[in-house]
Amino acid sequence: MSDPTLKAVSAARWRMAILLTTIMMVVYFGFILLVAFNKALLGTTFVGGLSVGMLLGVLVIVAAWVLTWVYVRWANTHYDASLRGLKS
Amino acid sequence: MTSAIGEPNITAIAFFGLFIVLSLGITVWASRRTRTADHFYAAGRSVTAFQNGLALAGDYMSAASFLGIAGLVALSGFDGLIYSIGFLVGWPIVMFLIAEPLRNLGRYTFADVVATRLRQTPIRIAAAIGALAVIAFYLIAQMVGAGNLIRLLFGLPYEAAVVIVGVVMLAYVLFGGMIATTWVQIVKAVLLLAGATILAGLVLARFSFNPLALFEQASATYGPSVLAPGRQVTDPIDAISLGLALMLGTAGLPHILMRFYTVPDAKTARTSVGYATAFIGFFYLLTFILGFGAMVIVGRDAITKVDAGGNMAAPLLAAAVGGTPFLGFIAAVAFATILAVVAGLTLSGAATLSHDLWVNVFRGAHASEREQLVVARVATIVLAIVSIILGIAFKGQNVAYMVGLAFAIAASANFPALVLSIFWKRLTTAGAQASMIVGTLSTLVLIYLSPTIQIDILKHADAWFPLRNPGIITIPLAFIVAVGVSLLRPVPSEERRFLELERQLHLGLD
Image (cartoon, rainbow over all chains, first blue to last red; front, side):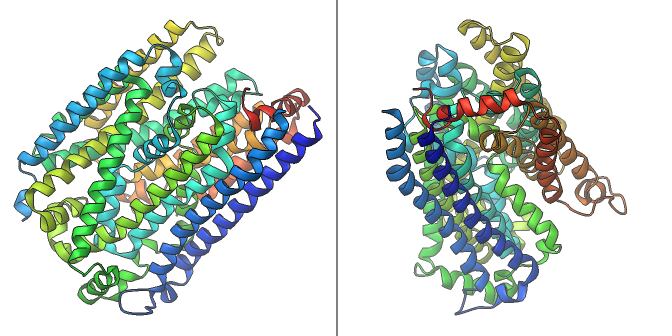
């Protein structure tokens, strides 16, 4: 119950979860806040057909992919190894 | 070109007939493998990560996302993309906070997790209220959408379309349970991803495979404002509120959460979310191409002439770039999409009624395998009949807001209690119960008082509550209620149970 290793594994797992959740929220709500408060900036076009808003929108989707990938990589290596340690 | 819509289309009927034959074949095969409650609710926990990734994507990518978002982008440009992005960003949250603990702590429903260290009866009843509210509004939106779309696509009467969807879905769930539902989702997800990819490919072929040339053409024809936020986001607070509900609602949808029990362990659940996020993100990126493609190639006037809401943008685009046979294929894919989503919703509703309410509340968790299966199937039949009746009762009503309402309830009623039960050891039965009930009721009341109901539907001059999306109020409220009630009356025995379950949370039942 008061297993110190379990505590450490649990703490590391939630630190990762909270860190990645915070990054995703900052990225997404940063985008939403720009949509809400700075429409002019998002409407600016770099080259023909590509506005700042469209580019940032695609980048939010890419960020979701990257963060998910980072978590899977971390969990498959570090988290799973700690879990194996707990089992034995 | 537009005349192809709304007439019986041989290719559409042939493709759809093929899908029905294939999916009923899967159901017959699955019915022989459905012998226990584990099979019926969780496909015997034998689904692989890749399969579950596709099935999650199948459950999530509704006809509303395919036809609705394509139409929204075609008619309002960038504003439609806000939905595409909002519908994806919930998936990383599901991954980081929910998927693995859910698999390790529960059996069939998300209420299993909330109830695991708290008192069963009050938690199950409160969770069932939230879950059934989400499922009911989601189902109504899908059934009404089905009736309208099938009338437009196949020329069938509205009522006939609703009954067909209800009866075929009933066959999947009743006989094949989660095994059939999973495979129907997989087939549907592959068809939808393939259909959308081919359609986007045919569009891009006209612009030498350069999406920017497509967007530039859209901007040249309809003005540069199509590439910027516009009139859909007039109120900044409403935009943030919608964003919150889309993101956190995904992590509270009962039919999505239920899918994590179909895999053998938490690691597989984790990998399956990775696949789902990849597929769903890819699909929503395609909606950029489909929406702007319809805007440029079909034209806004031609789209609104067929359906003022723009829902026919993608089928019209298919007819324009691929001719009537391709329109038939896309129409059949849209029909299959609705069927699969409705089946997933019904199965999760049946799990709530039979597993949460009947078995765990009325029978005190003492029910034989046989009784569990019988009750689950009776609940499935009841839900199918109710959804057909609701589908017909809401004919001609504006139900577009109901998917948003379902996400708002999921985010306010289910998500806070679920995430706190996993993360916070001081959460008490009373806290979780109050949070789920307040989350559901406050969302329903604020939607009723919002401009969507008061001005658009009831035609009143103004609305008491200014926002169309209540999430920014109701989600924090549900968290505050849960924390406040729990801290006011701490229950040390429930806190001790949290520490006992911490090992199971990470390692499962090994």
